[in-house]
Image (cartoon, rainbow, N blue to C red; front, side, top):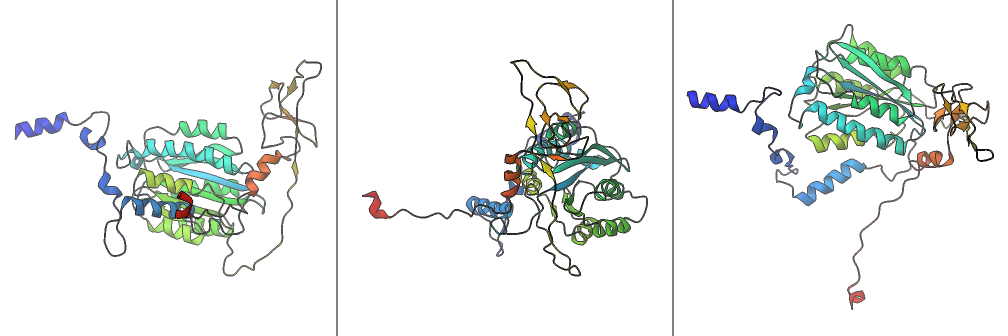
Length: 349
């Protein structure tokens, strides 16, 4: 008995929870899937199902989508993120996947804006405002790799995101993505009142759970025309997060009339600063208040921006380039899927 206890103690790592051999095991049995009849699916069948789930049934359909998106990422930083069922931990896996999501999001949605906030110890805090600069968000996402603390507060996080999204113009697609590992929420008031405000403000809430399905998350997603999914493993978790890179379909509620009215958005195509007589022309950047020599001049007020796409700090004009508009426009007319055709046997001869 003493030997068994000694072996058990020697397998525990003081810096982490659980046994050392549990963290290094490849849990291949968790990736097994069954069909409707209860039979195990082959690897080829699983890959086919994964592709269909990732692409979606409407990947090639002509649908109305939000081209200018305003998205807030809410990350759970409670003590539930310290679990190691998603290796190495839920916290580390979430940060890695978020870094990939931020890059892909701005690659496919250059006209959109993103913000990040987290919730821990019963409170919520915003670490980045809505911005179109991926550098700011990548740096902020890397800082999330910390130790989980306290309880998760869904209401405080949703209220903080609602405060920023409530002032967005009607042409903007307002979204919230919640990555939650906790099975409970420490809220100061009635969370259902917050859900009603989100639904009235046409803010779509999407949830990705890392533990199990909870009623409040499912109710909020259904009330706001969002999606709610629970990750099975790390690869499935990554697919669920990256599925939100594509702009969502603009849905109408049952009591809302379908309208074809469009909103015109003013945008400017700035010119890049050019050197005169082989000498750089310094200018004060309106974004950072620093002297730069390679900025972009706003076509309306002639102020200098450090990068595009962005918003002019002086006249609030959206500054973009033609390729940014084209990359956002391709979501409305996707390329049709390729069909595999077998070669004629006579061609081989």
